[in-house]
Image (tube, rainbow, N blue to C red; front, side, top):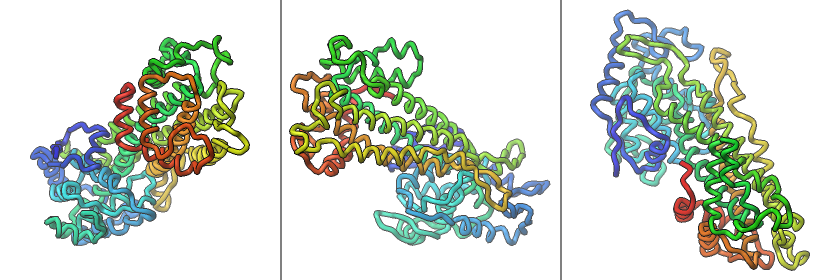
Length: 513
């Protein structure tokens, strides 16, 4: 297994966060990291002027005016983790929890946090030994991801529940089996374990990778729909993108043009077809999907900044002998980008749903039968799957309200605003899941429309995709009589989400990243 050396000033990409989360990379703290952490810890604990430090000499939130005596400090630290472990709901997936832990390690390793080397090493041990804390998904408001991070922090003390070697067990039992000794006490590090935005960074990194694949898959399904309708290639001409200068639009146009290379539709013109131009949804494929691609790239840029930053409060500068109470935990930049990606995915699902209706309408579908089925009336064909798409798409549209707009206040008004970024991430996670249903339906309409064309020459790459799906699906095309479409669409979703299909599209279409 590849080992990643953690240094104080390293630069990490969101893809590397995903690799660590999936267990493909182990971690090792370097001597430079230990020195940076020790220097900061010594500075905080041995300050000459003894200025008060939030979360050490005082309580937290609106208890920040309450002094904490030295003999109360250790208990207060443990109480902080226990009281902040107040999240509810289903446990987060193992991969997400691992990405959160890794994001927290990266922040703490920068040397701006009040934490001991032992504490950071234990977080590394959790990942390397495969001990995953059970973390409820609900409760964080993006003003420091307190609840999820507190659940992780308690495991370092041997408290809480974990998943280890495929089993759910007590943290203390798992650590004993792995040969890890829990901490006996906390000194000053509780707040550094929880008061940051590592949860939304970790989940956001996983989601960015999922959105990347979703955009690539919708580009593929759109190419099949264009082939099935026998649309014109004109909207994907590179001159069109050059005239507008949006990078996402240009990249999607190039990708679709490459997929369609060799197709018979390259020989058609608006004058040789029944209509002067394609419907707006078909023509605007590069604009709709390209806008989502641009917003994803903006999200990735912000993730790159957050992953490689210190998000604590307070922020410690040992060399400058400074302790600064601030708000680097406020992840509003990340929340707004997550919300924008949600909106642009909803635009893709609306576009895809509209193109399905174009494909079933004999007025617009260039000679295909109504609802893409022979013997209409006896057969309903692909009439009802559009109902399903519209129902799902309505739910997606209703979920586009930006969670980052909900800047709620807590702690009796002392912590009077928040970013909502965690809910932005959870919302995007749900929208991705719903969008995959519409993606599978989009593939269904593309496949059926192509199969009904008696004289069609597919593009070299779209043919590879069509043949792959026809080979691996549990029902061959064309569909000639009504079937249970729910079974088929579910199978399509499984196939296009699989590693084999994703490897195929990476070989057949230009890289977008």
